[in-house]
Image 1 (cartoon, rainbow, N blue to C red):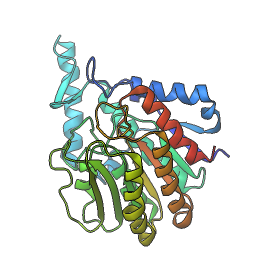
Image 2: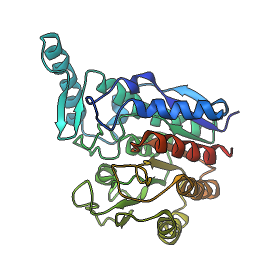
Image 3: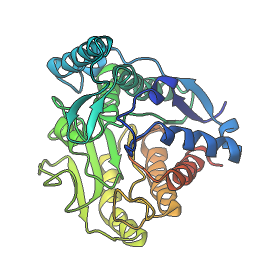
Length: 317
């Protein structure tokens, strides 16, 4: 049995937000190409993601939010047939095409299917190579390249459908996971730990002081050694005390020093170190259960190398 799953779907490459947009289909191609060239893909349990059931999305999102995205898709299709625009704008830097709905269902479906597979013991952990990303998607709002909150939906799914009592979400994207915070703040069944560049997008950074959140705002140009010290002194003691039964990772790689959408100074070895710390907590308290979902990362070379480093730690390779 390959111990690490790799969840994907071709629909995730059909969503695009216009020429030159950094959150582009080529991100997934760069990851796949790196894993194939390195031979790492051969060691992974590759599975196509199903579409997330609407009832499971409703664990993290309001019905009106879900219905509005479906309605936008239907309207867009009609407009295109009438010679109208090919994209519908959701916020200043986020738009939909006719494939976005299916891609977003597959992205959330990957996180949920990975949760099922890990809970069933079919694999120890999993990485979901998905887009659109999710951690800016709030309960009732799409924003910041995100439509459904893949990690929040999967975490709630593990609690509600699998009967777990405590799960953790670790977010190491350069941007604060405001959507995840919006959904899980105050839910003591979920511990969320994160670091993020501040001040930065989204405006205001962390907004909640809920006791189940460990938010670490860091200044621009912070390097990996400083981030490691912060994680060791804050994340890890809280995770140890909490003893999560499963860990979900919002795996954004835009804190890499080569990524122009952030101004932080991490490199591949830093992402590998963070992954190793989270995996060790999971092995002590959660039978090794980890589900990681791709978030940001927009320099294609840095993204591909960082994901490879992340997966190598998950897979012990």
